Length: 305
Ligand SMILES: Cc1ncc(C[n+]2csc(CCOP(=O)(O)OP(=O)(O)O)c2C)c(N)n1
Ligand code: SF4
Image (cartoon, rainbow, N blue to C red; front, side, top):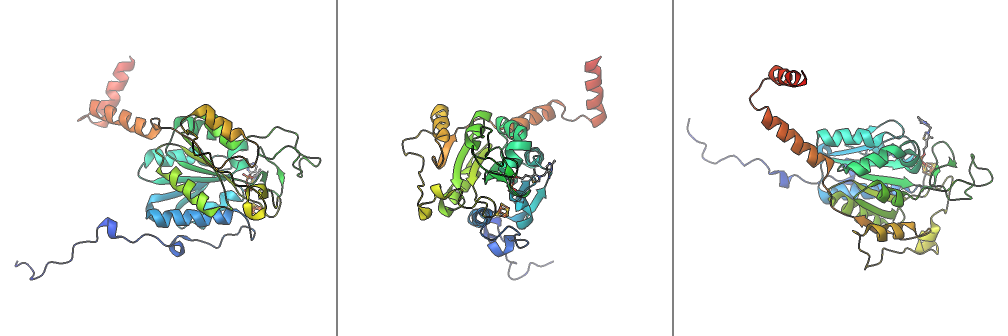
């Protein structure tokens, strides 16, 4: 066969594949209440994906149950709306079996710190490469205003008519104590800052946790005004001389009373579980190279005798 006079055009290199647009990423029309802070987080997540040129088949969003946890419905990509509080173990399984994916978990303060509190602790200490964004509105909103673990003392709700009496959890402080290797705080009313935090979290090789204050306009309107300069509040960023590798300093900053400090409070490098597991798997594969499955099993049984 003779060669064609002109060679066909080479296949488009992966780098030439255009990035996704917001239009391509947006799934159903979000069913949050108009003005809900969660809209802003979704919009900035789309921006992150556009900027980073991530493609649908490489993105996974996972959530539990709650208003915030509707997130995966609104993203045209792989996603799972999983059991209340169990988004992180599900997401861990996804990432550990497919380390090439970008796995994001979005959940409410109730989902991540009440019913899912233990899972957050263990995913953080295992340092699995997942980005977890807590959309913290200080209450359970989907079930129409109950006290949540982050409700401040005195917060009036249907479960604390006279005001919350239980000492609240500070999500950023809790994530540092649990062993998260990246902990940041932001607010949905500051889009530039929120995008910066999403980008930094996605760049982090390990478990990245963002506490994002996100206003529930239905049940706690104005809750975060004190952190919004447009509403007369102050938005204090982490001081320039803060060393994010200093755990005690990070803890202290995280501990400042609301509105506190916004930015990267803590960031260190520690081996990820995904990297360590991959190394173990490689070692095991090398030990059994060339053997059939039944021979590997036989060897294992022989060792147990
Ligand atoms: C096992 C289980 N327990 C309780 C519920 C009821 N429930 C649904 S959402 C929710 C809390 C949601 O609060 P949060 O995670 O803060 O999210 P928000 O709705 O405020 O965004 C609860 C208790 C449930 N769906 N499943
Ligand atoms: S109830 Fe609150 S958190 Fe839920 S969608 Fe409405 S404003 Fe958002």
